[in-house]
Structures are given as C-alpha cells and as structure tokens.
Image 1 (cartoon, rainbow over the protein chains, first blue to last red):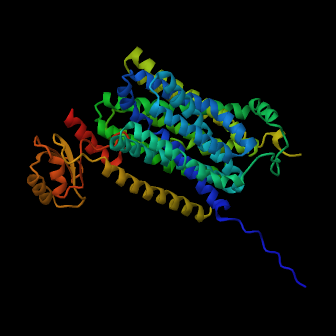
Image 2 (image 1 turned 30 degrees about the vertical axis):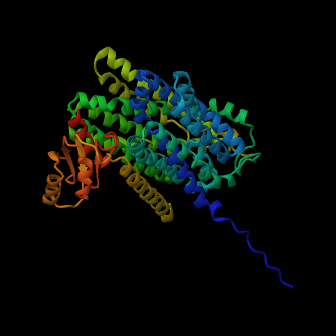
Image 3 (image 1 turned 135 degrees about the horizontal axis):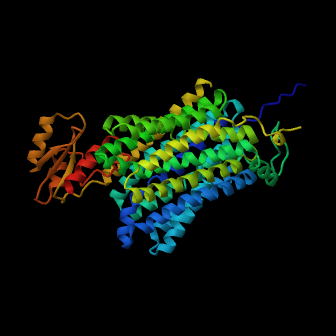
Length: 411
Length: 122
C-alpha cells in the first residue's frame, strides 16, 4: 500500500513574501506618523496657550527616548519575538498620540508625546522589523530586505507628512491626532505575519555560537569594529538632524524662497527612498563597510561644495537630491554589518545600541546648530563641523573588519 | 538579486502610493472651505482645463483673480461677498481652500501654491 506525504501547506500570510510586505507596512506606519508631528506645533501650542518650547521639548524628549528605548525594544524582540514587541509598541504609540490630543498640562503632554510616543516608536520601529526580516530572509537576500524596510520607512515619511497636514486642516488638530492614533494600531495586524518568526526560547541559528544575551552584549561592546560602527553612526545622526531642522532657515538666509526650500526638502525625502533601497542592494553584493565609509565621505564632499559655492536654486537642488540618496542609505549597511559581525540572534539588541549613538548625534546636531548660530550668527561653523565629522566617519569605517566576531562563530 | 525582489518592491510601493492618493483625495475634499466662505482663497479646477474656461468660470463666480499659481489649474482669488466658495464650486471648481493644506516642507507639487497662498494671505 502506498502512502503519500503531502508537504505542509503554509498559509499565505506566513510566506516570506507576506512577511516582508507586512514588515514594510509596519515601517511605513511607524515612520510616517512621527513625521507629521511638526504640523501640530502651532495648533497645539496655540490651543493651550503654551510657548513653543513646551511642544519642542516634548518632541526632543521623544527623539531621545526613542534612541534610549531602542536597545530595550531590541532585547525584548530578540527574547520574545519581533511581532509581539511591534504590537506592544503600536499600543504604546497609540496611547501616547491619544494623550497628545487630550492632555492640557505640559507634564502630561511630555509623558504622552515625549515618553510614550518615544517608547512606542522604538518598539514598533523598522529596526525591530529588520531584525525579524534578517531571520526570515536567506542571507544572500538579507541586505536587500534591510534596504526595502528602510526605503519603506522613508516612503512613510514622504507620504504621511502631507497627509498629516491635510488631516489637521480638514478635521482640526485633535481629530487629526485621533486619526493618526487609530492608524498606529494598523501596526498590530501588519505585524501578525511576523508571529511566525518568534524567537522565544530560540536556539542559535546554524553557524552561530550559543551565547547568552548578557555575554553577547559584553563581547560586542569590547569588539573594536563594533565600537567603530557605533562611533560612525553618531555622525549620521548629527548630519541628518542638523540638515532637517536648520537647512530651511539656512536657505532662507541665503535668499532661497520658502516654496523652493519646500521642494528641496521634499526631494530629500523622495531620493531617500531610492537611496535606501539601492544601499540594500549594494550591501548584498559585497563588502558593506566600504560603501558605508564612502557614503560619509561623499556626504562630506557634497556638504563642503554646498557651503563653498554660492547658494542658489541649482546648488540647493543638487544638494537635496544627492543628500537624499545618501540620507538613510547608511541604515541597511549598518544593520548588515551588525549581522555579519554577530549573527541574527541578537541583532535587534546590538543594532539598538548602535542606534543610541545615532540619536545622541541627532540631539547634538540639532542643539549645536542652534547654539552656535546664536553665538556666531551663522551656520557655517556647523556645516564645517559636519564636513569634518563626515571625513572622520569615513576614516572610522574603513578599518572595520567585516567578519564574524570569533566568539559568535559556532565551534 | 532576483528580479522578483525588485518587482515586489515596486508593487508594494506603487500599491501604497495608490492607497495614499485615495486617502489624500478624500481628506482634501473634507478640507475644502464651506460654501459660505469669502475672502482670499485658492480655487482648484480639474487639471487640464482650458485657461480661458477657468477664467470665465471665475468671473461668473464673482471671484477677483489675484494671480494664477505655479500650477495652471490653481488660482489665487478673493471676494468680499459671502458664498464665494460655494459659487466657485457651482462653477465647476473642485474645491476652494484658504491655503492648500499641505506643508511646503514636503508637499511636492502642491508646495508652490501653498506657499503663494500663504504669502498672499499674510
């Protein structure tokens, strides 16, 4: 008698393609919603008769908390699975945005918009998504998947910003926040396919040593190449945050119209999608640290050229397009390097620590930009600092050894 | 890198953009001024409509033309009589807006009109 054994059928929502798509949708929502918060500065401050500082402080705190909470989110994702952390993040994100809509005191606004939203962003961020994709996708397609997740986050930023503005105009700031809070809950169904990738009680993947999380972190922070990577990512945060916050003012100072500055910032967002995706492909074709180093060097060259040449519409356009291409293109390569050095088991945790450095850089870039402008009446010194840091990041990335850290290798 | 990966990316991003455009269309419609509104505003017609046709419709709506925006189908107009927004709509405008509810920071093709309207209002 013959017996036939049918291969177990995988439901469509647990296929690799569905999980990649789901992860990308999470990244779009996560990154998109936070990109709308700039549109609430004026209406919320006016409604509560607050000075702008209160809203700004909450947003600054949000960015810092996002950075600090990322390694914690990573640890939880590596321990309990990315999907659960993403879902918990969505709930916290939603609660924070709802609090932004209904709180009337600065303290509670900071707790909602600063603390809770910061934690929510970290817990549902694309680094958690990338950790899941890193485990799901075969090694030869991993970099591409990281690029796709990063590009999705970039796309989210690009499409949600105008949507947020329209929502405020159409329904008022409070209703708009409620809509955005509702949208943040979409992360829960989108994260569901990633439940298949559950690291609870996981064993190390083939080729990886069986290390505890504490040991893994201890080894990583004493690993020279990891420290170099962490140092370099600080520069990324510094450069991007400085440009995001201070470039419109710099352009206005040099006679570039407000509308043209708007076009320039939009172009950065658009080219960011292309650059992130391309970086993922490049990272999959060979070494990651060399293109990463050159991204920083090219950023430095472009920035130097932009500052040295007279500011015009043409130079602004060229700067915006080229910086857009290099904007988040560091992310898939940095994440890829973490995976090469330490494998996939603790990648969310170890990338989380790299990201803390990025957010510290962001904080200093924004703060120093304003501080030095107040002191010297010009942004030039910060632009040149950005150039110097770009060259430093280039030099720092070159010696990175793109091999598995010996104690993370099996056997 | 298999081509299917790129196809997947393209399909996903295109689908997201289509959903986004649909969502934006709905919300932008809701963001339009109420029919009784007057004062300075932007009148938006269907892209591709002949300039003379739009001009005639604006005149029939008793709108004072301030200027045409960078996009040929968006006009900056004004009118003191209440009901200008409603009259524009009756004359075939897709909607009337105090300013286009899209930030010039990231608005893409709407940025120009937005900024012009804002500058005008200020």
